[in-house]
Length: 259
Image 1 (cartoon, rainbow, N blue to C red):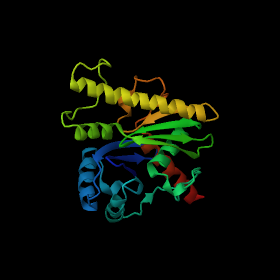
Image 2: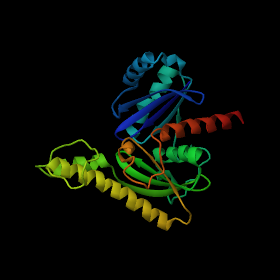
Image 3: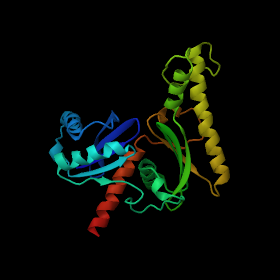
């Protein structure tokens, strides 16, 4: 079985595959200090609840944007699965041309999303990944990563608003019933939610003006579902896009090894 690990700045997604079938998917907060042993305890308990064991894992692939976490994840795979994990980077990812001025600066998550989106939807795409940051990534007609836009994530903006203004509370992010807020919480929810819808629509519109051919838009990420139904600019919502990308990269790596 394949264990696919996607480590983001705020949360991490972990999925277990048997061939093409996703058997289980879990989510945890990202911690750069969590040790291999702690990962193993947490993972073994979740796998046991789903009827699996650590010994069932034969392959491991990792996408990681938190460098301090990689040491512990490598040790997890080596110590508990007795395997060397495949770590995704611009240098290791197969079949993806990185068309930016400094290819090594492309984040692993953005490249994995490129692979997953191209596999599922073809080329000429904008991927909107809403997480700690909001990324707008361009996928060429041949599956190449062609750069994009990085903006602060919606949760970061909400946190900054609360921390910088003494009288503004910390609130949950949700779509308000009305654009015009009638109290502080309603006004904040409207400003953050519709402000981000405006950000998404505005950036996508400018990308489409600049790009020479029509683009489809795919949304993913931890908070992408918040915007479903709120904008017509997004063609597809795919919460598992990154995990699907990891599965496809693993397939390519295995195919290359066999060849």
